[in-house]
Image 1 (cartoon, rainbow, N blue to C red):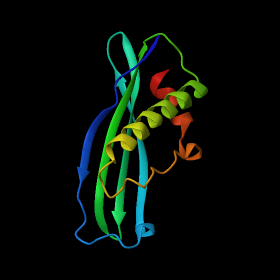
Image 2 (tube, rainbow, N blue to C red):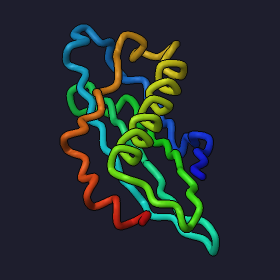
Image 3 (cartoon, rainbow, N blue to C red):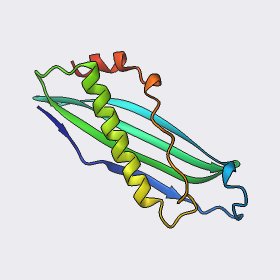
Image 4 (cartoon, helix red, strand yellow):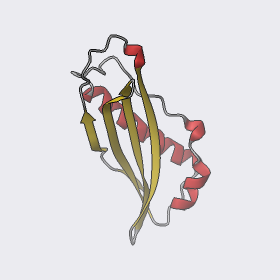
Length: 130
């Protein structure tokens, strides 16, 4: 059995920039994903930690970090497709939380970078949970 936990926002540090944004196209962002192994006596799993940073030129506007976990029974096997599906679900929750919280900020017209699935090394994650 696989259980997904609630997405937990670890950091939401919004720093309104000192200058007015005359060129919104100069706002850049980056997105990263870290996978962490989790274990207990009868359970195993992993956590997805997404980090996104928005910058205007070199000035940080927002640092957003959130974590989502999956808890799996110790004897259950999980394949590559299931792992990718779990990561997609976590990213979807991460994005949904961003869309809600960005309202009222200078980022209300910005979107998160899409999840680049080709850069996720699923083969390195499989041994963590099987």
